Image (cartoon, rainbow, N blue to C red; front, side, top):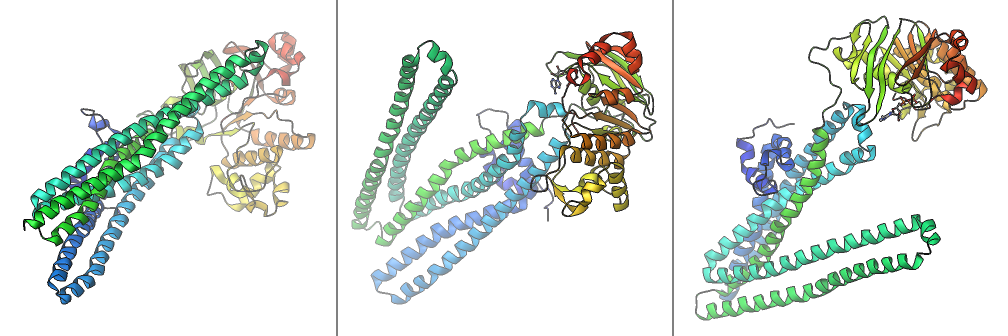
Amino acid sequence: MVVKPRPKKAGAGVLLLWRLLCARRPGGDVAHDPVWRLWDYTRLHGRRIVLGCLCGVLVAAFAVLGNAVLIKKMVDALQQGNLRVVTLCALCTPVVFLLKGVSYYGQVYLLSSVAERVAERLRNTLFGHMQGLSLGFFENRKTGGLTATIASDVPLLQQTVTVALMEGVIGPATVVGGVVVMLYLNWRMALVTIVSLLLIGTAISAAGRRMRRAGEAIQKSLSDTSALATEALSAIRVIQSFGAEEREAQRFREESRRTYHGSMRVVRINAALRPTVELLGATSVAFILWYGGFEIANERLALSSLMVIFSITLSITQGIQQVSRLSMYRDRIYGAAQRIFSVLDTQSEIRDAPTAVELDQVAGHIAFDNVHFAYAGGEPVLDGLTFEAQPGEAVALVGPSGVGKSTVATLIPRFYDVTGGAVRVDGHDVRQVTTRSLRAHIGIVAQETILFSGTIRENIAYGRPDATDAEITEAARAANAHAFIVQQPDGYDTVVGERGVTLSGGQRQRIAIARALLKDPRILILDEATSALDAESEALVQEALDKLMQGRTTIIIAHRLSTVRKANRILVLGNGRVQEQGSHEELVRRNGIYARLYEAGLGGAVGDRGNPE
Ligand code: ADP
């Protein structure tokens, strides 16, 4: 059940805590703070958060009050020899702990469920958003980093938000409750205790800061040492040729010594920390006892109250520790949320224009009209490319590697936008139609066939999940794939991919052809395989491709003479434009670039870049 957003009422109680978690820099822009933005995801569950926090307050209340009242009553009764009350108190203890336990369960359950729901929503939003981003985005980012955003940042956020919300409530509630009870029992004792706690707290946090700084210094010198070793070992040839081994060893020794000194500083602080804390703790206990004894002697304090103050002091110490951890949680949440929102803030470069129309039926006419194109920050690849492909025509693109053949192919399904001119399908500029409807008419068979982990059947039906078994088998037959599919352990239900059966290059390609056949697009893009298929496999693939091409406009990134010969027209690309065009025979007769490519062996003269599928 998703609680309806009630930001003002339900969320208001925890807003303050949330605000404490954000606004990292004083005076910083809270609205753009990633932690603040996370609130948008969290406040949907305002009621659960409020209930969870109330449970947290109950936990603190039972811990402080329950303890205080029970200890006081018990000690008072013991002093008066009232065994009935002592027994009653003893019986009440498990009840108080039971109530505290139930509240704790409620708090953990409610707040964790909020964090889990937020994490689920973030995961789904992130994945959905990433899927819609343009190819350019993925080229600039490592896929590993993007997966890490889902696989590590989201769980990190979820765990930290849960703990932060829990401790952010229990900590302050315990401290406030504890101080109030102490003040109620004896304000002088309360002040003495608070001052002692503050002194210890300051000393410990100062030591903690020094430890952190020293730890960071060690990390830095460790990574410097390792960088130095990596650099020196990878340049060993140069070092040895200059006879600089001793100089490098000396540099390494110096860096190594720095790490040693840094580590020893941490060792010293660490070794001194525990005795110091114990000394301070024991001194303040002695001081509190001494002062308490003084108060008891003056009949201003009961022995039971002194014991309660002692017990509460322990709770308050824990509460302070919890509060002091909040800034660490905030930094953690900040980092993870920042990485998540930086992905969510990325807008796809390829977006449907508001006026974009659906491309229903197409004949398959393709036109490149004075197209200019460069990849982000790169040199121009296409420089006024103009050509047309008539419906049903097969056009082969040839030219040296890197000339832009694959780029031409990626512009038709609008994986990138042209920087000048226009790409048209049936007269429609591809930027003026919805990408979904445009791509529905385009089939791509790339050099490297990507099969998803799943069954062969699912892979063939990827573009048309509603296809019937008969249609799938028919497509597989036409793609010369049926024969090998039925030989697989589970036929069409054989699982391919990561944990499944591995198929040969030719087999994968025939599955991709079956997939394209089933999709039945008007326009086909073939990035012809150069990978050495064995002769039989090649013949089967070629035959399947011939069937696939029938009646479709086909743009072929051609590597093989056999394909080039079959194409109705060959475009020879160079300098970002069409340099020559015509049939094989015409171009050979012309004795230009194509004739030279042909003589050099076409296969060796063309690119081998894979196409996105
Ligand atoms: P071909 O298919 O003819 O081998 P491409 O279209 O793959 O040529 O590449 C044309 C030029 O664009 C090359 O210089 C290549 O390095 C560059 N290029 C290709 N893809 C990208 C990309 N995704 N990002 C940046 N530059 C690219």
